[in-house]
Image (cartoon, rainbow, N blue to C red; front, side):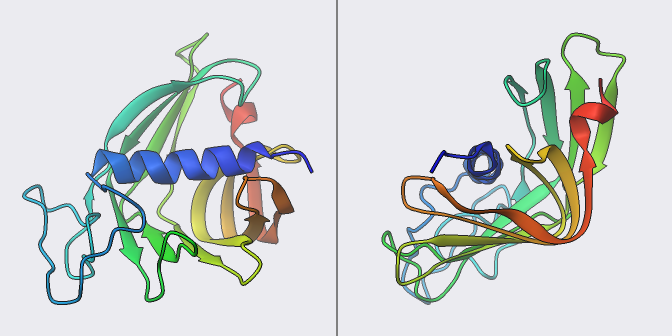
Length: 184
């Protein structure tokens, strides 16, 4: 099965947000009781359920998602919450994004841009077959080869194997708004 860019976009956004706020690893949780919050107030390192969300500000250019390059600029906060049972073999976490916005600009025509509220959450669990199920709730930005770059509002789900091959394409209830159309 062909790898979908949904995996690339969803993972890229989640990893970018995590790296921006200093997450050393998606699965490196310290033992209970050893919680410390980073000095910037960030909430994405170790077992940090009591830490506040951290600044996720970052700007980068993305090609191959629309028919033109786009610049993405993230502002707001994000937090990765590691769940019980999290491990290298079976990642379990929730990625939240309170107050997170993304401004997407057509890099070929900067007068064409849109700012979107993407305060939704990603809930990832791995089943006994190694399939990662990613549930997206609320307002999220994602990409699938069948839908393109979309703002999804509602409850959506997709799944991939350990090699990022799509097992189930994006499906769900709610709205899917094509972002490339918004800035073309």
